[in-house]
Length: 511
Image 1 (cartoon, rainbow, N blue to C red):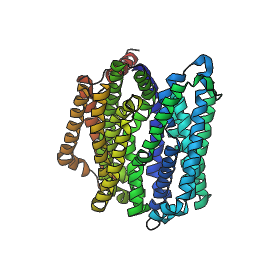
Image 2 (spheres, rainbow, N blue to C red):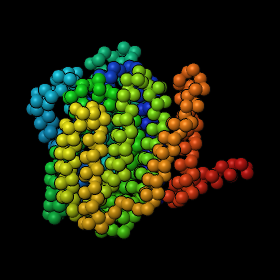
Image 3 (cartoon, one colour):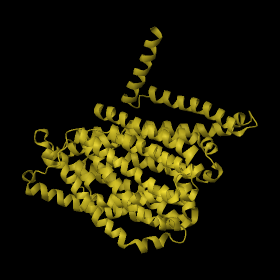
Image 4 (cartoon, rainbow, N blue to C red):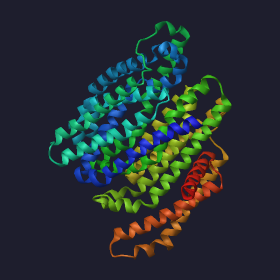
């Protein structure tokens, strides 16, 4: 677990630095520079491009993790493994790029009534999709080499800094709207170039293929696995973007812009897993290859526990400060309509990030073909539930649909993982963590009823009152939660860091 913790901490620091930049951008720039419709456009453009790139990968990211252990050989340049990770997605982009082009009219007709601006910018999906595709490919290549921090920095920090610069140019009227969209697209191209430069700088990459290393059995396994992934991607890749697509089609880009702000806030919950999962997946693949059930059980339990612990704590802190967040936000009353969306979506992202390591186990086991069933189940249930619930509850209906769809999928998937691979994600410390978080939410409700009114009457300025309440509530409830987690010894890793920090403080005092 030490390698995972050290690597994930570095990646998480980059992720949260990006989150800080994103917060500044969202709260002080984005809603002031762009209209809600333009925010919705950027959200749908990126989602559509990510969908295209996800299909075009042809399963390369998962297959790279699964099959790298079969190629790993430093003395022989990994037998040209990375050549295939670049070539296969190129073929996939050509295939699905043509499909997206030929289906342009029927696709855009779905958005023409409520989201005409997206129709006029549809062609930008292709360059953004290409850049996102190869950023993901090169990031995966770095991950299999156990390098996480720099790719995370590029993805989480560099892209946000460059995007902030584009917003500033647009606000200064140095770019017209067309120029803004072009510059926005170019940001992802620069990120792709940065990933290429970093990967080459490792001097561990060879793009010279070693055809002799690919035995008939290895080729057969790769083709069968990739065929399965391609089939699964046809339904599974669209699921994460169903909400924004349905909201754009049925409610318009302006509503999608409001949803995008809520989506960004909720996204902070799963940020630790972006690094934790990136470094854990190659290890899971290695354990499954070598049938190390005991080691894999220990690994996935630790990953699930620490994602739950950190993610739930982030969600709680965000929720107790939600009113302050919307008060700071420009035109916050309009975006506050998504307050409950943030909470529901936050629980969905928490649920998915905690349990997705189970999907990883199944994908890298010999029973990987079961994943197709669960992928289809997730996609179909998400589409059906969105169609049923959006007309009833609007944005809230969309995120409730996603939450229910993930609950259905994971309840069955984890059962199969336990039966087929004898691996379980669950342990007693997770139950302790759930009790602590639920107790904190209960205490927060009591605070709102009996303590908050005192703070809200301190000044005639609402924002001052919210700041006072937020500082005290975060300190008291957050501090109480950390103390209980420490005393109850929920995580040895967390406790060791707390003890180390306490000893450092004591050492400074003695000096």
